[in-house]
Length: 297
Image 1 (cartoon, rainbow, N blue to C red):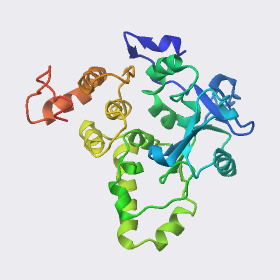
Image 2: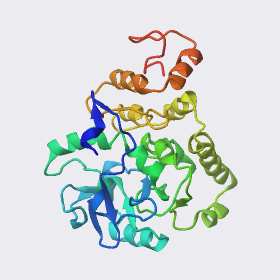
Image 3: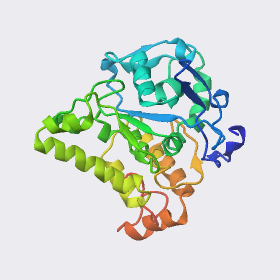
Image 4: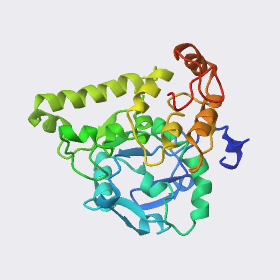
């Protein structure tokens, strides 16, 4: 299936299941096809885990037999994969997609293979969350207890400000599990009113504009404007599923932002292209005047 997904440097089959899943019972990362098939859907349905990535100084890279020690797994220094596994098992999960375990990371034995896998796997991350049975959220870092102050909302490491987490709110048909330890509602009761209101407002806004499936081009672009990423091009790649692109450009780490934006616009449906044409008040400053350049966006 993955061999047939590429054509002319585009992913023409964007409805791909993840390449790997974490099987919690055996505590191993395996190719998706190895996992047991669900009788009704004829495919294993993993949970997704969404989390805020910590700063490099606050996380460590460690090799683990869970993924066959193929690449180092970056997790917060005060978090443990075993505890995350137990928590997910207690919630009823059997299969899980967790990026640090299931998406090949930097520093492994096959760096050449990572670049090839990322061409396909990174742009289709949004599909993992769209098809997930449930999505579990760690707002304060992978495996860490929930703890947020007012100043955290302005941090570049805040879950609400990361580019990749925007598409991780596209889950529409299944419940969301918020992993907070302590429980969200108990925690919110002891928060000051302003903090509680802000969290509830931001979550509600994301659910309404992104998860409802009614988001338009301007909604997605407006939300992405507030977000940051380690690699600037990730902000563009993270928009693909939100803009309902049926054909997604392949991912290249070294690609310029304008080139990535051009590729994304070319893959958009006419509805979203029309929104750019009719809604932006000025001619484009890039190589196309009918739509804004990424710099203008």
